[in-house]
Length: 264
Image (cartoon, rainbow, N blue to C red):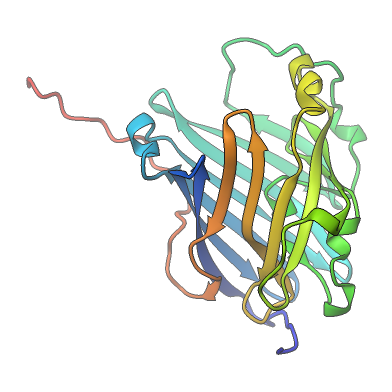
């Protein structure tokens, strides 16, 4: 096994994932990771695929970025946008000294949610990760599966949650060399409606297998599975991360295409 390194100058790695529900292909995610010794930038383009294209042409773009510390991350920002009703919605979460400080969005839901425990962003503090960044592990080889034994707080700008590791005995096997198998349970903390808290106890844990990204110190999921009320959701890597200059993930979403009127 080669000794993991972090590139001195920025290097970009790409991969793609397919999303299945009950074995039916519904979506695809193209992923790009750019890292140097001091910074990271992780972005993804999510869109319908397979049977999912019959039901939706929606797309979403997510980008999380920040600095790298000796023992982890120092988030600086999270940006995400998505198409809906012929417009592009967007949201931005900004950080200062690793703590979230502001959240802005142009999205206005049709009805207000009945939040049980509101979140004050100035009280969240440092040490949280956004849900997208939580799927990227950065560690030294001697740490082993430490990620799978330490709770992680998640914050997306409006809602606070926690990933709690469970007993690893029944976690999925890790057949690939240098893989790490995790079983974690998602728990709502604040910012969620009453219905989410009521269903929390019924939620099944996530089984995740992480594999190294090339020869870097980063690991990403090779496969993620979870039981839901809609059936088993499985997200699988189409191929391993590879260094590339290909532009699979756009800088921003374009407005939805306007379909030609057949009768014009």
